[in-house]
Length: 333
Image 1: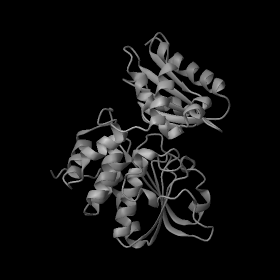
Image 2: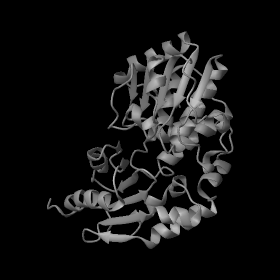
Image 3: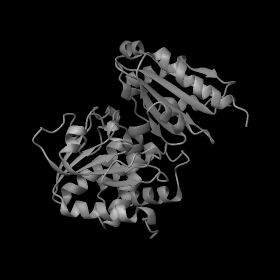
């Protein structure tokens, strides 16, 4: 298959990034808070390619790599401590961060970076970089990263393919979400051609779950409520639930998807009580744009999958978010 991997509106930005990579030596890479498969997989793939090109790379994630992703090659090289104040970089590349704050406290590093690159697939992404490769029609940031490698004529190794595949398969919900396109499947096919053990990756991602994660799933399902005439599913995980089972935020990965399973449900929302914020995750099917709801509360994402973090109490967050969602789901066409 030789389908062109560029789109005209991104042609210039891709070329600028290619030139930046060629002419730079030091790179800082970061994904978003509460990292997922796309954020981590994309970072590891770019980091690996840059190192093979002889570049110096520092990979950072303010929150630790989740347990279920630590099998990925070189995951241990991602640090949770920012570089020293004396460290300067030719380029800082932020992956799947709709704004710099999504990556945590990155401002000190970005100020010491000659160029900032924004690579994202969310339509709510702000064009904050010197170079912005934002493609909302892509299934994942990993799909965009593959296009970068394709344009650069970079051979993708088995290990890099495993990282990119992880990003794509997790952000598409195993090719279930509407953002999955023929191009997405073509990229996945090319990655499989490298010969990496994709069945092992699938097993580790979807058929292996920590005991803490299973127990927190049980608590979430016990909390399930149906509102808006059965169109809205609400899941709530309290701080006490985490404490009771020794679980962490990462153990809630994919729990929200269970909310869409009851017949008649058009949207699901999960509230996660953290030590200083309330994590809110949205899912929807059909035309309901939950990214607009998330953006109202300072977050963002896709039409059918998005999220935000809110200050204040769990009760207050529920009241505000449920009011908006109920109004949208009960409004007459």
